[in-house]
Length: 484
Image (cartoon, rainbow, N blue to C red):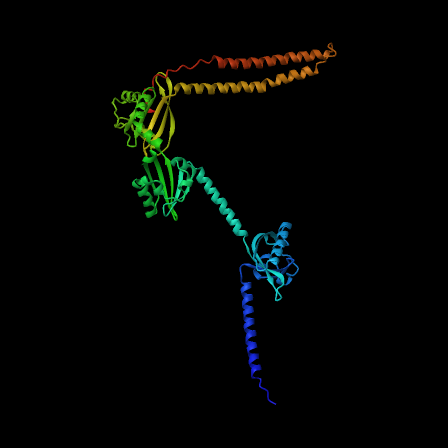
């Protein structure tokens, strides 16, 4: 008997091809699921795992074969567990609806925060028995966002606390940030400025340095610093602008008061000359080339008396008539100030009639507007009277220390002996023969205390009998420039 099995064979071959294709697709799907960086899980209607991909298992230290009967919210708080039960109810009631859920738990991997989306999965009969969830660990993301938020707040606090005005513009010259100092200086609210054009808000600035310097900073990608007067506010500003990848940031100060002060410089100079000539102290200033910049009359008179030269402004103050020692000494003193040091020196010399004389000389560097040192200001004063008083006080302090030592050491011994004798005196039996011996010893110790007191009195008299030092500070030392 012969049977036609052509159709059967073709069906079997087709079935094999379909089975092979299905197996390949299943393997591909499984590989795709396991290679996902996101979490893929399934749970039953009680919240127990029925499936979890490899990424999830590795993160939480779970084994795919031991997932059954483990709750998805095992490590969550009771409140979170109740919230997930509500998610299950909602998904079951509304199949196909995606329900979001954020899980916070203390898992074996540490504190974790993950975002999930759950949806109910109906079976072949249309019954909902499982939920499928897609999740992602956002712990690090939230931590990073919090750090960024804290850092941004810190930057904002700094910008709001600085005394300089600060604002930023984007590449289209629109304001993106304005601090509160800028609001005060410009007399404009930030909500009026942010998002609007700098040149539309301040059109007058386009004809001034603001426009050219800001554009140069952006064009050449360099910092610019300048001062400019702005007529609408009747103010002078000191500005520094820095290019950024997004535009330009500007720091500025209102220096109107400084400019007004500069206008009074001449008047102040005249007043200063009047002040420095109203003293017997020597006041002068010297340029870095040792040329006289300014001086009061006492300095000029003293220098003329010592050198025979009538010195004028612009003349050198170091003369070849000085010996090498004097020249070198003053060069060193001036050079210290020219190098930026502000300092004071004391010099001592012996006056043939008045004895030791003391002079204090102060040096203060003079700078131009750019901060460069162009000279030094000098102030010399006779401090002989003060110095002698200091020496006298030092001598008196030594004597006071000696008196204090005597009081704390030599007085203590007889006083202690007196107290001891008083304690052993027999007050109940005055006629006790032992009391006579106590009184004899008490008499001796009392005389010892009297001697110590006399010694203290003599030391005290030495302090009160020292003659007061009388000094005449009306004249400066004749050999002031010698600095012996």
